[in-house]
Amino acid sequence: MGRSPGKDPDRSASVSRSKSYASSILGGSQITLRAQMATEARLLDPNETSDKDDSLSIEAYRRGFSRCLVLRNTSHTSKYSEQFRDALHAYFDSYGLLNHPKLPSWWTDHLGARVAHAFNSFLPWCQELSVNLEGARVLEVGCGTGSSTVALAAHAAYVLACDIHLPSLEAARIRLLEDGFANKVKFLLIGTDLAELLALTEKFDVVVLYGVAEHMLPNEREKLFSAAWAVLEQSGKLVLYETPNRLWPKDRHTTGLIGWSLLPPNWALRYGRWRGAFEEQTDLVRMYRLGYGMTYSEVLSLLQRCDARYAIRYKYIRGPFYQRALIKLLVEMLGVPRWGFSENFNLIIEKI
Image 1: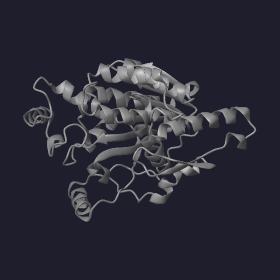
Image 2: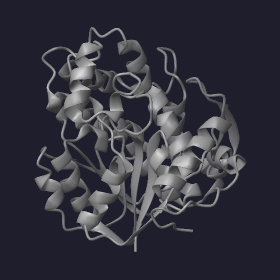
Image 3: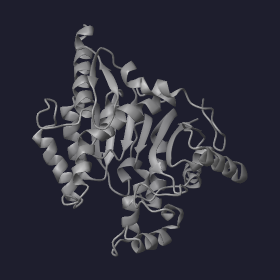
Image 4: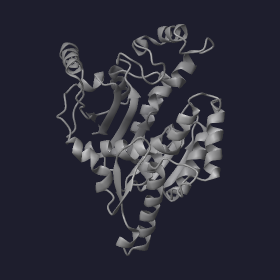
């Protein structure tokens, strides 16, 4: 059921439902997944259906799912092509990250782990919070190299995937082509002024903001929410996922510093420079681009500026006793929603 802002939701369905999602939507033979995940998924046998189109779709799902969830190596038969690897190389090169010490880890993430997370965590979370992606028209803003786009396209009828970064879109295009979902996805290059989004006239059942709002400037966030709300169908869902909450004591996204995200932007920049998290030439724009999260009041303010009528859903996650006690105290004292004190904003905002 939908929840209004400021109301504590009931606890969501059991964890076992989430863990079984990957196997319930598929079926058939088992494959073991690696990429630091000890999960299993069942894949449909294309021979189980006589419909040619369904068979092709299932085979594409099999190919994409196995490629996404298996940590790739040079001997694996479903590895991405050299063309995709070249596009990924160009993606990292465009950010000047080819010599970064974390490049091997990031490379692995983009080849498999991120898509594994989308299939094994993001999709089950959507299902638990009643986001029906089957046959839906989806707008994804900030698609990056297509890690989440693959998971969305496996279920949706149509996905419009947008990004401001051309090398990201090129890598995403090749990924979706090789995973068999190119016919479902259209790519759109947008500018930082979001003019292309604001000009959209088509309507969508779901708008996905997957790890994107924290990389935008305040005025861009306002335009983003305005554009997203305008193209959302009545009873449609705006999905805000993995956006860091600035009220969380430790920033795990950008700096790794305790207290950094609690500071106003100018102070956060100075503190980040002083602690060595930023180079001296880093300015406010660069800090936002690296990632500067949001607060619950900012989320609500952006919705209010859209003159939105909405209901917010989220999944309650039990933490340590001291953490639950502190959050309960803050909720009661300040009269704010419980989700306002989660580490990341993972919210379903339904248009009513």
